Image (tube, rainbow, N blue to C red):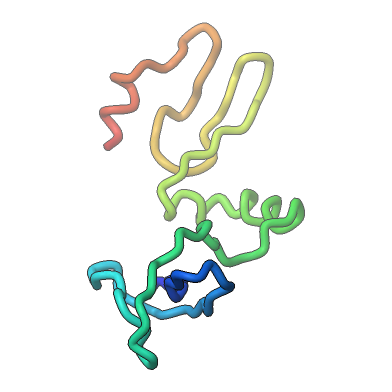
Length: 110
């Protein structure tokens, strides 16, 4: 479940308490503090995507071709000048400069 951040609404422009609440996306935003009953507003926060996003961890994940295919990604690897071979996923086995793919080629793999 997502965690939402709320802040108590104050008329005097003084710093107000902020707190977090786990709620379903389907739940309506809180309008009052669950303990004090004071009016609150939900704050917009940046998305947090958990995990480690380092160069080395991404490199390891990109090398796991079976996993990429299962997650719906297609991986092509350069095999020569203007030639790319499919390693995982769906799509043409080979893409070349002489025979580029079109939208029609991709639609047949949905």
